[in-house]
Amino acid sequence: MKPSRSSNGQRFIITSFFFIVFLCILASINEVRFDSFLRFGRCAFSRAPHYSSEEKFLAANSSSTSNSSSTDDVRILIGIPTLPDHYHKRHFLRLVYGIQSPQNAKVDVKFVFCNLTKEDQKVLTYTYFSSLPEMLNNTDGPFPPYHYVMKADDDSYFRLENLVESLRPLPREDLYYGYVIPCPSMDPFVHYMSGMGYLVSWDIVEWIKESDIPLKHLEGPEDKVFGEWLRDGHRAKNRYNAKWSMYNFPEPPTRCTRELWPDTIAVHLLKTQEKWIRTLNYFNVTKNLKPSKLYHIP
Image 1 (cartoon, one colour):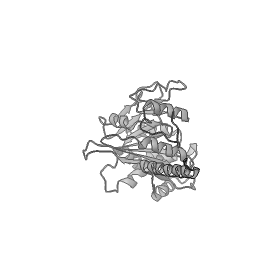
Image 2 (image 1 turned 180 degrees about the vertical axis):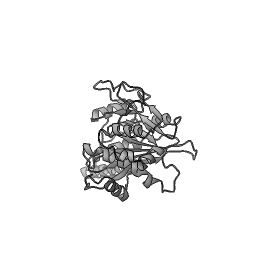
Image 3 (image 1 turned 90 degrees about the vertical axis):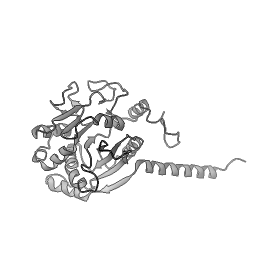
């Protein structure tokens, strides 16, 4: 006797339900509202527009993957600016980062979003960094709450284990880390780090909050402006150029691209689904995902 269509339909619904629950657990979807963050932004920028939606962090993967309490454990916060209507992109990134488990490290990936235009992105970047000490230093956890804080683009893919390992031998104070601009340059002390993803130590985050230099200089591309803050404030005496472990996707070829390779820390400019799939397949990210009718990865 063949099973009825209704029984097949019920089986599919039940299977889909448990799969969705699994993804929700995997992604650790927790929203935390920071009203003080929003108030701070309005007070600090009297000329800034009043945003209709709240500014908030959305925890994508608050995975504390440290297996011990060793002082050598690395704590990293990665903030990804995004827009409220980029719902599907955020859920995709939760899955991408949720299946990574760097050892002896705590890596928190969080979304930072509000209704900002491209031109206003500099306001969000300043507010993101400058608000963190007030929000995180008062917690009962360790100090500093994070050794390093990163701003990353939502079209960048970071391999967290390689990122952590590259940071272990580096200083935890006065550090500026990323991909040096312009693309041919290998000297991190001449210009600045690309907006694909740049990282600073916690003491620089606190300096951004306390100093008048960033607040008085907000005009221009956010990554270039950030580098000029550090230059004008005589900060970041320790700098690390992660090129060519960080690079743009290989197509179309430019002076900023290279072929995918095993020692990759980050790939940038993943603007299409095809580029994401090619990148994830290369690094075998999808090998542990079972086939499903709910998604298709070649």
